[in-house]
Amino acid sequence: MTRTPCTPSQRLAALSGYAFAELDALRDARLAAGADVIDFGVGDPTEPTPDSVVAAAQAGLVRHRRSGYPAYHGSARFREAVAAWWARRYGLQVDPATEVTSSVGSKEAIFHLPAAFVDPGDVVLVPSPGYPPYARGTHMVGGRVATYAVSSEGSTLPDLDALPPADQAALRVVWITQPHVPTGRAATRAQLERLAAQCAARGVLLCSDEAYSELWMDAPVPSLLEVARRGVLVFQSLSKRAAMTGYRVGFVTGDAAAVASFRRLKVNIDSGTPDFVQDAAVAALADDDISGAARQAYAQRIDVLCPVLAEIGCRVQRPQAGFYLWVAVPAGESGVAFARRLLGESPALAAMPGEWLCDPVPEVAHQPGDGMLRLALVPSLERCHEAAERLRAW
Image: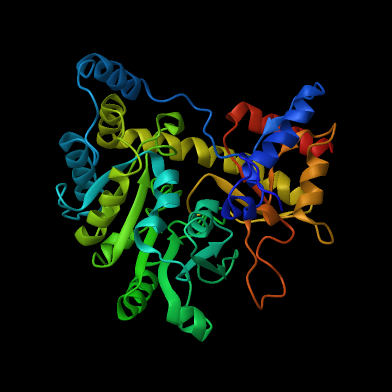
């Protein structure tokens, strides 16, 4: 192929379309045709950011108007607020000087992590379904992706002993999601302990994406950091718990040596999270009522939609955590086909096909996304009631 100045790199060209962007295009086409689409597709909260957080951001804009570049690793105030949250929430003592670093949301941190730890040919193990940046960041540095299946039953964690010998030999990083999304299930402390021990025995970095940890329904979910610190990194975000997706702020906590390597990478990538955004995050971290209100709001939406999905022939379990419903569509239909029908004139609902969220898992006859649908419960409660009525009339 002849290269031009605008020809993308082979690694970029090898990436498939980003699922969320593809769904946006389908939804936008229906909106352009005049449809009143209720969007359950992308997990972007529609609730306003709490007033106390907005006020802290506004005050921060004034406070830092002559401050220049922010600290690369987060302000001392922000990192201390993170440590205080870990102590209050989990009873853990975290050193804000060496075991915490800020991030520009969790997406960029997750995508960039392989550049700090993965060499070409190294294996990174990721869940399927899972957050696309786990795999895409690996591909962009020449790493090799291996996948493990997560379903509505069984463990949400991998068994490293079950991996092919070649993958075990090259394994460098293992990703888990705790709680797992979109299935809404959480691993137990005992399960986390077993996996942490497996990774430690192999000298493998264990990374836990815990961005939805505060959106538990009936009981709090354990953190990986409760059972292990060495060789562990935990990724957190303020996006979902405090409706702060547009602020782009998160944090990484764990093994001081791993945090140091990640900081070294980040210095070469960005110039830190804006100080006024960190001030807003400090306010959000200090107020547990914010995540409590979010949990109540999403629980109400779950109660509205689960029964009607069952009425139309879908199978869905109430999630332990998160704001997604992982739905098995009626037998004989793919998630993609069902999602396209949902976007029709009636009921005009946007949802994410499970097939678009899952990387292939070798030697598995039924792939974890086959015949599945993900609904992000971000429309208002009123719109969820409207969606339920449309489904009943469908």
